[in-house]
Length: 464
Image (cartoon, rainbow, N blue to C red; front, side, top):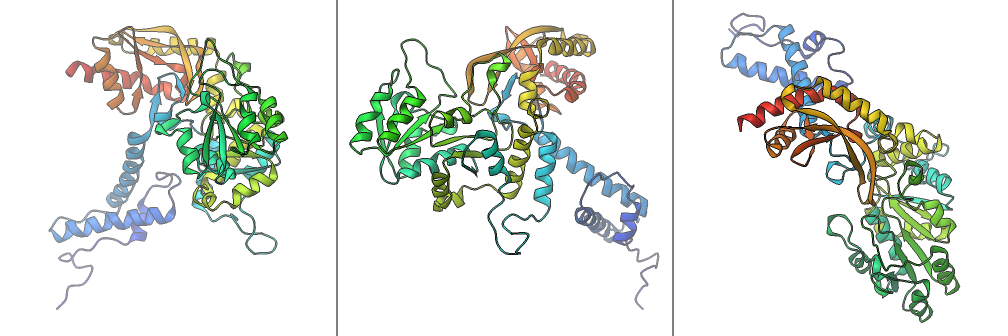
């Protein structure tokens, strides 16, 4: 005779519903109901395997705790693997994901990723409509452009803009034939777009008149200006005036494409830095198309932002490669949410990049003194004046006055390695044989995690 399900000799685990009822309310935060149910099923599957091995059955309460533990472990694993306390003083750190997003922008992106959207559907007609335009409309409003387009990064934006030349020539100053991140070089972008590179001027000096001959004889259809956002020239140098180049190009029937690299929608000079060219300024100076990044000084997600003449943006949008270079719905939503902060006047107070740039030395000194008082005496900690950099290929050579904490430990190399391998991961730098933690790039809510991380790192460094 077959044994009944409730026979003590043939124990079976409780139902998914009973286990979920035992999970304490609020212990799983905003976990999706489907994820929660799948986790409970995984726990029950493991329970069945234990029962088959002859182990005693677990109570429904214990199984509920196991579900909570699995969810918590997943969250911890993600944080431990990815999240970094950036104490390097480099604000836009390429190796750390560039610009951290504002919390509300991350929330918008999460909602967009989690839900269906009216991405290409007209609400009124119920038919396919134009692709989500909020980000592009915000760019038009912020820069004064006639139209705009969002791509998946600025290299893509430049490649599409250069594609306006077709198989014609693209005139570039020899002083602007630069290499950007990842070993990508402007000459290679031009050639891969199918155009011909026409070099003008010299490495250190180029004038507007240098563009006249290749434009007049038809060798070039486009002038590509590349802002040297990741290096600076000094000494016997000269760059052409943007308005002069644009007037010359337009008189000869050519197009001016201006690649600003990092791009800035706030005036960096207000914060004691050199003035970074703004898209609105370059459009006002006659550029037809301006491209820049969304994840550097703009402070949002990785994206390429194209602004300029409506007819040219329309041509770029119709390029077959534009589809391969367009961002997904979550990125579009995040770009739109980031730009909305500029439109509302809240960029400086809300976007992490600008909050860090705007921090006063006095506020940073107070943080440094507070942290020193909380650190393990073995750290030999003291508050020190520092210089922070913007980073991310922005404002080369420019620094901001900062404060941080210096650690006088036995081995700076071992200490930096121990901090990097710890949980949370802390990235610091070494100066004068001391470990330096620049607090300009440490979010205030992370300061409380540093004392324990430093004490643990001291123990780890001393064991090596």
